[in-house]
Length: 331
Image 1 (cartoon, helix red, strand yellow):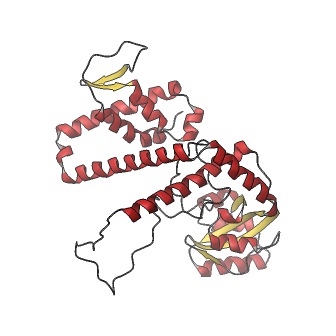
Image 2: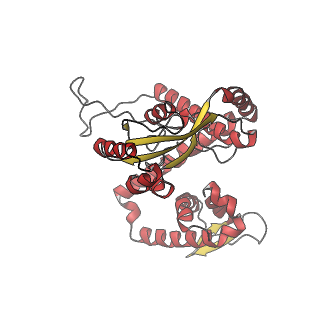
Image 3: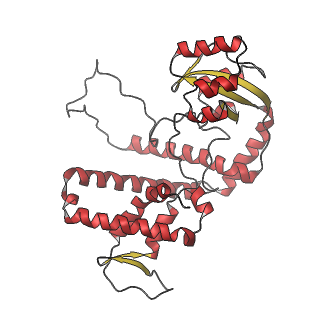
């Protein structure tokens, strides 16, 4: 069954498109042009609106369901959304200043995404991906990857207690199921699978790659997510994967670099004035430093993009993935 959450997540884009192109004209002839597929109190939804909604679905959903298969749920959700939108407009909620601000911010986000996609479509080419793959294939055998488990806890004292239990012969996987705050780790005994050094936050990776097969950290490892106890199950040279497998990940890395460069250039060229939260001028000294948040990202990532970073939907058409959840160690 098509996940309702995945459908609803994409439909803001669809609703924007439908609202922008809403018409009251007669439906187009069946099978030709851009036929009308629904009418809600005179407001029309066209086939192109449904296609926009479907295109915004997660890649894994589109791989499981064709447009035709997803259509009944998509159109049902779109109709429900427009019915509610019409009720909101009738109540004049679209005149509320806060609502208008939120609509403006949502429009800015959609335009940002469209701008980034234009850059990526033009600049992430097959030739560049093949060159990046050739470099990856050349360097891969010279690096290692490890298979590891970890136990994540909120305090250093708890991590030290776990290490003490391991020294007395406790089983690592069993302790992970009992103690870790990582939801995935509770089910897997703390298993995080195989990873390269660039796949993890530096503190975690540095500690893991210092361990031999079968060893665990003798002191707790601190990251932004808490305190870790790490055990390395195995080590091996990195295996060269085929182009078809690696290309989407390379595209994602290339996309992140291109977007970061473009945003930095736009920032440099723009006239930007930033004031305090109350609108007053910022103090030249004595003011608290602003938090360093990476531009173009909803939240901090767990690691910088590596040669085997997260995958994109398809080579040549990458999209930036949402921020990694705290319970996931890999970027």
